[in-house]
View 1 (cartoon, rainbow, N blue to C red):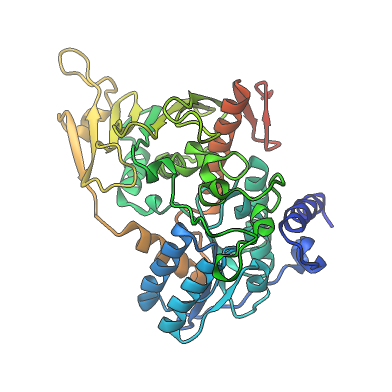
View 2 (cartoon, rainbow, N blue to C red):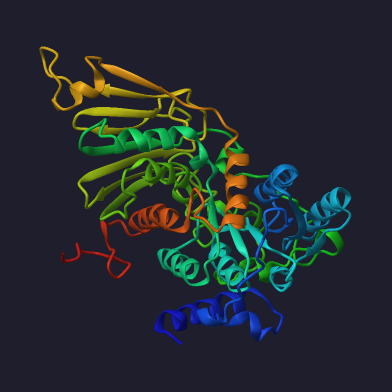
Length: 454
């Protein structure tokens, strides 16, 4: 067994053993790549069987979106899982009425053991994303993995390596990246329309009760409850710090470091992932620094309510992002070049539709282009607008995943692109929590306190 597989084996042993009181050694050990299940070969007309693991608000929505896509893409929901029995029963009943049958369980491993399941949607709290996705791929399942891709930099590395070894399809569930504006922007940059790229900027601001992650708490629910109110708290905690049941942590997990990276992982992933689509060469950050604080919501959370980061890239450009959960005013999402600026979302809402992207040329006094080579591209204009096709990004993203399951091609937000976004936001969380600048040693895939030697 390779050193990489030994590391992954140890990683999963810790994750699965901590997450359940059941004795199942076969689930605990990550096998070598040679032993990984190949999965079913899905023909063009074969039905794809999908299971959803984690059917809270987001997971239940994902399940219904897959059901809609399935009418055209020939897939159906065959199983649902959640440590909260009420969620399991309501979703199981919903899809049983639709399809005639649907399995429901509190233990995700029962789903992974079913050979009839072709793909899993992982919509759990962030700290469970990688452990479940890794085990699913080893069992021959393709994975639709909700954003953020995972919880740590090391988990991102494990996911990249496992996709390569098992040849499974993994789509990261940031549906924003299926918007046409990012792909139009990518083409414009590749065509040399902005000259040397120097700075990207974006934001994600909001100001509402749900936007603060203060989701409704079911007061009757808990590990001591019976029937539909029962929560398997030990399973839910998984490899996180052991503690007594806390309803706020269960229902509002994004407010706590053990299960989430707060703004960075919940909101900035929807900004950084599209940026990596736009950039002519998706890249890992070289240097990251972050700041912010709990300015408005001081006593009800661990994570900041206001957050910002600066990242520098070895190719010679920077990224600046800002966000607050106590103010809803965005800034335009754009990429600045030495010769022109490219505005992808002038209104600043990365998950919103923009009818066009705009290129604005940089000119000197007298009207001369800063970069003379761009004069032919702009044909004397100061500004060019490129139309954007409006699509249902969620449906487009899901159908892309299902199509790739049949063709075995890379999906829109593949694991490599997703990992570049994940490394940045995980580093930003670490930078904020440690109060220092951090660097990424790409060769060794490690976060380090000093710039690595070239």
